[in-house]
Length: 129
Image (cartoon, rainbow, N blue to C red):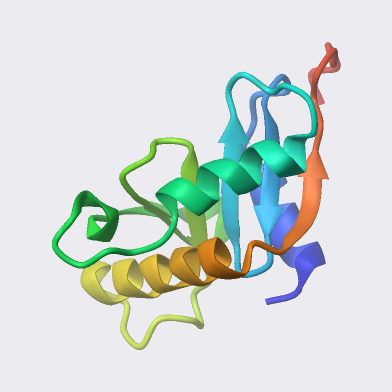
């Protein structure tokens, strides 16, 4: 999925105008509840710690949220601010388990490659749009 589409999806999903966030290449978004300093570095540190999948640990857990506004799903993990978008054409099936495995795999890939593609810096922003 291209970066422009992913940025548009996350802008529709993350509606709080004060939330800063960082998007990684495969669709994982890190929401920064206390943004500080270089946002890319802060998000990379969080994803590097909480993104990789480790069998038999909470890092392999996931939840699936069907998001009609974005025509796809958001896959959650063991860190509440690390979210991965899965588009409708990506999973091998439409059931939550297939979607969750796809999202978890994308999160793991983003956490091991750590390629930032977009930073949404909302610090100091009072603009509601």
